Image 1 (tube, protein in one colour):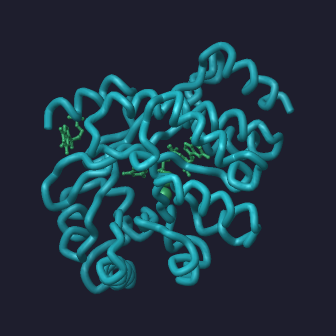
Image 2: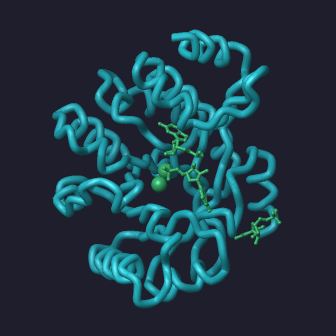
Amino acid sequence: KEIEAELRLALQRDELSVHFQPLVDLETGRIRAFEALVRWFHPEKGELRPDEFIPVAEESGAIITLGNWITAKAARVAAEWPDDVTLAVNLSPLQIRAPGAALGILNALREAKLPPSRLELEITETTLLDHSPNTSAFINELAGAGVRFALDDFGTGYSSLGYLDRYPFKKIKIDRSFISGLSAGTTSHAIICAVAAMGKTLGMEIVAEGLETLEQVQAVRDTGCTLGQGWYFSRAVPDYLAAMLLAQE
Ligand code: G
Ligand code: G
Ligand code: G
Ligand code: MN
Ligand code: NA
């Protein structure tokens, strides 16, 4: 309750910001996308992570306002990037099921002058579990407008392959829990190989998340993952640093 009221104030007081973490092409080393990750700089509590306030915002329904704000803010930043750099935004289950959700996102894109084809929405397996008709309507409406979809945190939920058939995912993001235990001969290694091979057959990009070391980068590249994300390349950084990373390319 308290944090809910504070969150509303925080939006007014401009305490929230959006940071950006690069997704790097494992062949060329070039930045292909940035994932928007929200941050809250609380005046007393310091930096609050999304895990601490996104669930609260979901319970109270504030996630709709917050989510639209994040998308709008990130889209204005991304509109300044080169045309071939994609913006990835995370979506909560509630955001997708809310009436008018798709329209809210399309409005944010229009105001930011970001073409829908440059937005990619990250959805987790857990979000899809509800089989809500609103969820399919949301995905189909935005996909029809050119927005792309990524299946986030893959491997941590039910990992139903039916989702890949039912929804137009262009990308699978392998959860970072598979990376931490990665070395040849492990189950994690075999799983990443299998997912990468499936992605290739289906024409999908496969992202390895949570890459922290050069060894991990080389290992996932050898398995056939096409993109990498993690602290090895960069943490999530403010918009001006993201622009600097792009300028160095
Ligand atoms: O950065 P990290 O601590 O940055 O993020 C923690 C979790 O919060 C991740 O699961 C991430 O998907 C989620 N998250 C980060 N930013 C957003 C956002 O803007 N919207 C939603 N719905 N989730 C977010
Ligand atoms: O759930 P999702 O994948 O959307 O959230 C991304 C989360 O992963 C964020 O909390 C982000 O800060 C975190 N993250 C990004 N790169 C790394 C990494 O290399 N190592 C670890 N431990 N966490 C990471
Ligand atoms: O040095 P710094 O902490 O800013 O960089 C963090 C990581 O980001 C380093 O691992 C570095 O290799 C990576 N990095 C810095 N600039 C670029 C860039 O222009 N392109 C890519 N792909 N990676 C970069
Ligand atoms: Mn994500
Ligand atoms: Na993820």
